[in-house]
Amino acid sequence: MSQQVLWEVVKGNNAFLVKRNGLTLSTDPFNNTGVQTYSSTGFISKNAVGVVSTSGKVNQINNINLVTKKSTKFQQADRKTKNTQSVYASTLAVKHGVHTASRVIRKRFGTSRVGLQRAALRKLVKLNRANAVRRRNELAAAKAQKK
Amino acid sequence: MTSVPLVSVFSADDSSKVTAKHIPLPAVFQTPIRPDIVSFVHTNIAKNRRQAHAVNPQAGMQHSAESWGTGRAVARIPRVSGSGTHRSGQAAFGNQCRKGRMSLPIKVWRRWHRRVNIKQKRHAAATAVAATGIVPLVLARGHRISQVPQIPLVVEDKIESYEKTTDALNFLKRFGAFEDVQKVVSTKVVRAGISKQRGKKYRVRKGPLVVYFNENAKLLKAFRNVPGVEVVNVTRLNLLQLAPGGQLGRFVIWTQSAFAHLDKLFGTYRYSSIIKDGYQLLRPLITNPDLARIINSNQVQEKVQPAKTTKVLHEVQKKNPLKNTKAMDRLNPYAKKQRAAAAAAIKANTKGTKKIKKNKALKKASRAAYNKVAASLNDATKAAVQEEQDIKVKYFSVQKGAAQTE
Image 1 (cartoon, each protein chain N blue to C red):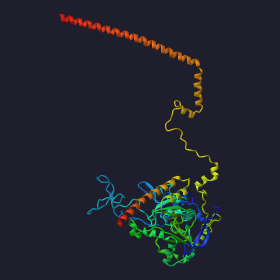
Image 2 (image 1 turned 90 degrees about the vertical axis):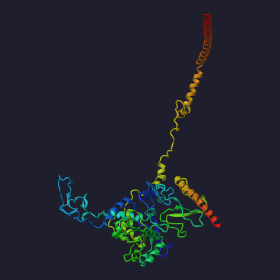
Image 3 (image 1 turned 45 degrees about the horizontal axis):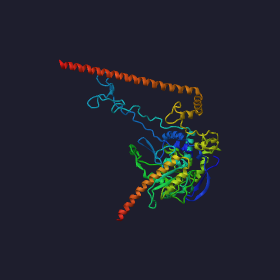
Image 4 (image 1 turned 120 degrees about the vertical axis):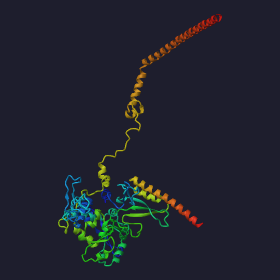
């Protein structure tokens, strides 16, 4: 469905819209800037990558998930990989560093949509840094406990 | 649309199994999305469930109040007659008065209901059905569909024979619709305001809408008690359910026969509807609304002029070309040659140069002569001044001597 048409329907009111203090923000997982604008609203576009922080499982070092938008033209979710695929998105856990994740982002956007690409990368880096702090604290706490 | 999109029908027992692989999508789902029509129709149709109410026509008027007129140092509002009570002499009847009747009291014959043109109602319903097949719209409405295998979700008719709520619940869980039900349950809130004393205690969200076809279906009772879930027959699709609050994109679960019935119900772009007499689906103003794709297409790009580069017209600081040779050369590339030619002309004019040299030499000589004269004059004046000084000294010393002698 055309992004323009969807935007006309969705811009006035949608589940992700948050209006506070004169700001128009969005909790859309595909939106990396946080502000609701036509280009940054990823859930209405065909091609989007959301960088999402999750309450991670033990194996996952980074609590970051990459949520990449799939073409929603009557595609079925892959039932085998139930947790990572849905009708509209496939989720990739960012496990070790940000390298593979940034490659995914870069490949997605290519040479076009540089602004969106930068927004996604920026968020990825920031979340990664936040996670580094958290991990450091956890390690320190674990060490302290051992003693 | 040259290629018709295809949809799979899922088995009721196992969400990974598909009973019918590729069913063509009914034409309703390709109706243009018209939020303006839906909004208009919804605001009017939503008024049709209202019950008449009114204010007691005698309220505030059950007095024999009369105005005291002028001359009594009180406002001219009608005042309650009689005496022996606080109420007597108090203002009455007016909307501004305490215990007075309201202005324009509500009458029972207020126009509670709105009629909407049938065609508009049908277009709105068609658009609403189309919107249920568009994932971003369903997401935007707030349904939790991350586990749902397909949108639009079509399931075999077996669910129409469900009688037990447990069957219904398990079915919803299997198809990832339970997340939406959970949302409904967790966001059930006691309503703010008086309505809670008038039978509307809770505010409950809308969950999935289950659409069936066969009239004998028992699934109504099975799904009835599941919070948020509504059940409706295809032939009685309701805009208030398809687009609650005027917001497009309800999460709908179709049974196979209901899904198949949609073509008969709304018609296609090839034939008009069989059931809705003479109704033809709305045609889009633009068949391909994807502007980005149109602009980037070969046909357009071939005809279009090359993109203008954002060129800076001049430097941040403007240089005056009359004074700055480089700036001049940028504007007029021939200026360089012009300047060179002028210089060459001056040089070529050798007469001119000799004259200048001669004048220079003359100037120098005259200056030297002047300096010489000036120097001699200087000396002369210096000598004269010195002489004067000597005379003065002599004179005064003589005088002093004279004074001394006296």
